[in-house]
Image (tube, rainbow, N blue to C red):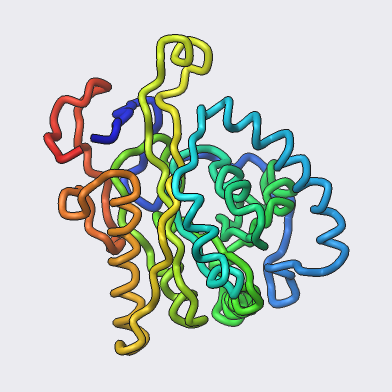
Length: 288
């Protein structure tokens, strides 16, 4: 039975895809058809080379200490490396600040990028987010969005691993898997590449860690096996089918029976369900 932090520390929003962290800065970056959403230039690779070394050999060990991180399922990266090297979409529940750094370091042998909320690229951490592979979603006029999507599809088809948080926003240390938006499945179906599901689950902290880090839980990153689009379905149905199957996969990775998860698999203006009433978890009686 997985551990549920059941924390009331964070202001989870009314809708399951909303952001509660505020971006204080706007540097005026314009996301238009000229913007390099996936910058694969030699200049960008030079800039990020030493930064990625810093992530791998300094930040990553610090992250293991900070989150008491464990990684399970690394064997799947080796087993399916021949598949993943041809390009794939990766997904995960979004439950910790900078949890993409943990994911990026687990996938360090692959060329990775991640879709991010556009205001974050304009904000105070924008340059660092860009350096770790952040790709802003402009959420703009169709031709601008098309340019972004074309860049992403080209990256995937050229052998990249493109990461999507299908829940739409970060809710720190939240246990249930929120409904998925269909973006990850869209790219998987359009590019005819698999989805590699990952899931972050929790472990209860010991007394010393509770006192030192004031963290609700320790983290475990679970790596699953690739999930493939159903080629017998039309595009719309294939995207819906893949979204449901990938949602089920992430549930299972974190130890939740998909039938017992409190949210539907596909986002439909879904609202938060208060499945406990206080920090002790009084209220919900579920399988986990």
